[in-house]
Amino acid sequence: MSYSIGELARMAGVSVRTLHHYDAIGLLRPMERTRSGYRRYSLRDAERLYRILVYREIGLDLPGIAEILDDRVDAVTQLERQRSLLRARIARLRRMLKGVEKMVESRKAGLSLTPEEMREVFGDFDPAAHEAEVEARWGDTDAYRESQRRTSKYDKAQWQVIQSEAEQITADFAAALARGVPADSPEAMDIAERHRQHIHRWFYECSHAMHRGLGEMYVSDPRFTKHYDDRAPGLAAYVRDAIIANASRAGVE
Image (cartoon, rainbow, N blue to C red; front, side, top):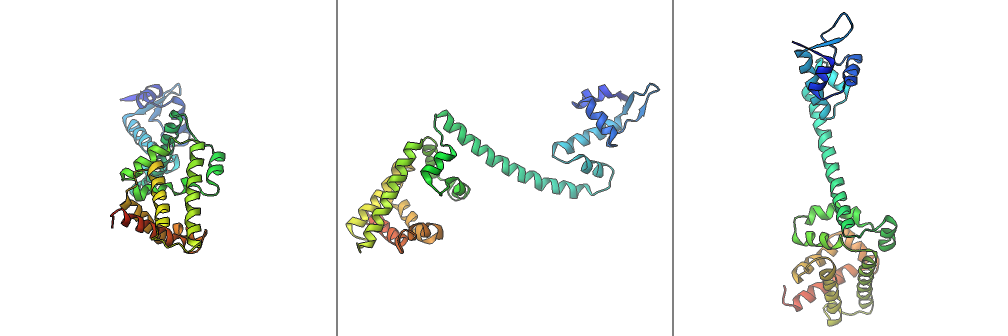
């Protein structure tokens, strides 16, 4: 049994030009040529083309495929290498898909921040730079999912309000610390409660127990500690202590 180049192209779902190219580079030569110069392909040629197309589908280049088919390189080694590349590509595509899905959600809601607006609202802090870590740590929680749902709908004006409120709370904490107000005083606890309500209102339902966990993180994670202590030395611990005192006031130990 043999096939013309047109028949083989239709069977394999490729173009005649592709088969011409494979012939020219020696990757798939026809079984024979007729007296008129037409190519004729055997069943074995068709099987070789199938293997070529499988290897192309997983991303191997033509020289690499030729090496495998002609037994010039170990197929297992080549395929394992390609498997690693494919896994990396899949991970990258998943990240891209997640970003596109968020953009679609924002666009459907008629809301989105341009890069310029992001810089205007957040300054040098880039929330997206920490997104992968946040998802890794809390992605399976209801709080994370609720925060993602809410924040995807906020526009520039809302983010400015959020940032302004957060800055005022931090400033009030720093001022209380500077005046020597005890962290377990009603004044400091009230600021801590405003901090909890701020999270509760804009991001997710923040219980006193969850708030305590955040407070502990402010001193256990050097990045959070730096954020507060750059404002005033010892501020991270002060905020943590005020949050704990406020939770205790609410009966949460």
